[in-house]
Length: 99
Image (tube, rainbow, N blue to C red):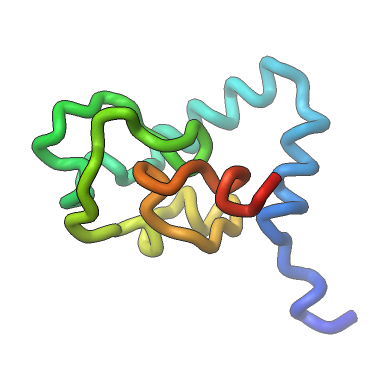
């Protein structure tokens, strides 16, 4: 089997998570939140926003201006095979994927 087909896609990750129990999803979200780097982002800094993990939870109602995006270097992005940026302004991975 070619290596490309062995790589897990974002869509496959979402399908796997949809089959998890609520408790398993809660544990996964906790794990991802610990790895989240949103709080270090120039777009997040100084806005007063308290939420994290926009790639999973959706856009912020507080953050309004792009000031640089560090999503491509985030371990959560890699873990979930996300391929977008500015989740805080554009919406979650599912939203950006049209799911």
